[in-house]
Image (cartoon, rainbow, N blue to C red; front, side):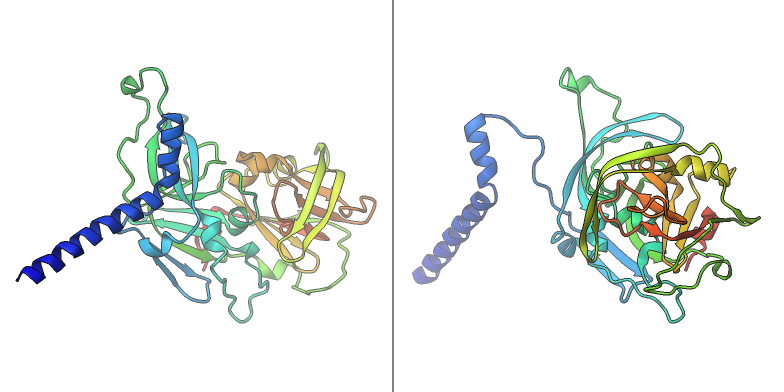
Length: 363
């Protein structure tokens, strides 16, 4: 009996010591920081809570199911948001901890059924679905080809950012409760129109495109497009450039996703993308999308929100000729703020207006 009690006491002591050692190891830097500075940092480590789940499906080689344990293995980020709703009402300032969507998508393999014209995901959209059925959409490219500045993120922790003077009296943060699921935030966007609470599913979809009007995909073809055509539901007409202003971008570092460094361009001048689209597609909205297609069938899809409502959109150009040959025949699409240049389209031959309905009807 005494031996059993003694063994039990040893086990309890070992458990307590082990717990203390693990805690000290996990919190060593934090404890050391507090001991040295006496400060209380606000940006503390957070982890995905239990019960959070996410499914990735659609045009993927397999369906992916992530639960809290799997989500905890992905790299996280901390982002502050100043939130305004689509009607211009201030919703507050918050600090989020979450997983950039790019960190999830880079491990997801897209699938291309037989007969798919283009076997790269740059013409896909990603649909996010909340537990209550609400949805929002992004182009695949704006989630994966842009830089890491203010990434679209699935946040699992949120805390209000309070002013230093009388923080307890501050009442302008609408949301004070903790998150109970994954909250989609888009810090580049000017408002919360594409934010979504309690996301449970990401679906890769191919929108409906007028394939019969577009060039066939011919990989490796050294083609030239002598003209540029604008395609919409009502017309297929030559592109217009009158009064579209020229803009210049300097020190453009060009890096490809597949083959790496492609050069640094001291200066490139081209037509302003926003003005070009407004002229050629009157009545377009930020909810619509635009597909840019080269004469070899290469293509890239952009959301109207990214083009018209973010700072990245200000840096999008249509270059005359080629990047290094402005006197060459034709045009090149140049989203110069992208991290990767994979959404560049040389030999640009068609610009297609894709309605929000066509995106939502994707499969």
